[in-house]
Every structure is written in structure tokens, then in C-alpha cells.
Length: 241
Image 1 (cartoon, helix red, strand yellow):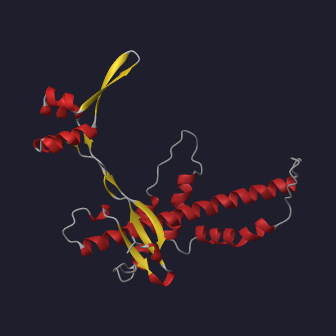
Image 2: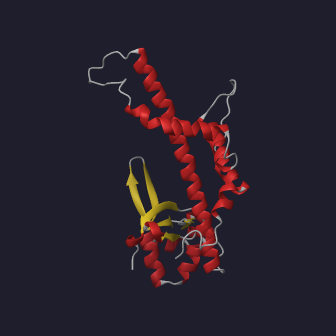
Image 3: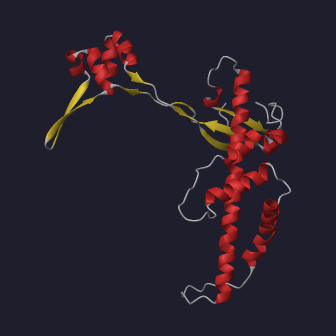
């Protein structure tokens, strides 16, 4: 395992690349009949643009001021809660509103940065898989990790891969025939009607006795999509030997 640098990833280039910028700003579009207004999506888009391109822009200056003042804002003693539900003074209300608005800005910043980290890491893991396994047709859906030894951590992509396919039961029934279909189904009596359900356990038991059933099952599968995988960070020592 290698870290991001030795994996051949130019971090500076990735952070400032048009691809990274495009990935960050591809969020759900928000439309409204009313006049345009600030939304979470539009604010995140503006923030992503500031982070990936305009590194000296007003947006980053505003964020820097917000972050530098945030701890001081939390420490101010203008708001005291005694649990009595007393009416808030105008000063207290203003303080709480500033705290709320700054918290929202910082939360949006954290979410955009976290999403950017995940996307960069997944691109690096995909490149690593493609380099180490040239014959792998879908490296973007392979589980793997990248170690960061100096911090004792590793970036991980987990639970990626092809989703479990479904069985086209009508196609399977037609291919098996009614006699075998009756052997792999269960009849359930419920109020007002009777249901016939496919039993995977019985189907596998029949396939064990009759290997040709496996081909029938295969021809009846409905290909599913892909799980892109979950992003997480784990300790190096947690790796199974």
C-alpha cells in the first residue's frame, strides 16, 4: 500500500483542476418561481468555486473571518440559559442569530470540503486499482485503500461492487416448467388470497440435484447496478492480517 503522493496523485493539480471543480459543483439544482434567493445548493456551489478556483476571492476572506470569530462568538456571555424559558432580550436574539448563521456557513464549508476529499480519494483508489490490476474492467467499483503511515490511518473504499441481481420469476418459471416451479416455490395463505413465493433455499437445493438448473437461473437474472462504495478512514492497525 502507498500514500497519495506515491500513488502518483498530484494533489495540487487535483485541487485546482477543472474536473475537481466540476465534481464539487454538481449538486442538485434548485429552482423557484419567486425571485432568485440564496439556497443551500447555491451557497455550496459558490463555496466550491471559491475553494477550487478563486483561492484569493472574497468568499474565502469571508469564511476566514467567520472561522476566526466563531470561537469568540461561542464564548461570549450575552446568552445565558437558566432553563426557565425566560423571554430573550434583543441582544440575546441578535447573538443567537449570528451564531446560527455562522454555524450554517461553517457546516456548509465542512460538507463541501469533506465531499471533495472523498472524491479525490476515490479517484486515487481507482487509479491505484487500475495500475495494480490492468485487467480489471471496473476499477472504480473495487474495494481498496491507501495508507497514510505518518498519521497511522488509511483511506478506504468499502462495500463497492455489483449489486445483487434480481431473478425474473416469470422467465425462470417458463424455463423450469410447472413441475420444477412447484418444487421451488412456497404457497402462503393470507386473508382474501393465496400467494406463491419463490424459495431461494428450495431453488438452490434443486440446482444441487440438477446442475442444469444453474444455467436456467443464470439466464433468468436481471443485472443490477453498482454500489459506488462507502468512504471511511480507519486505523492502520485495524487491518486484518
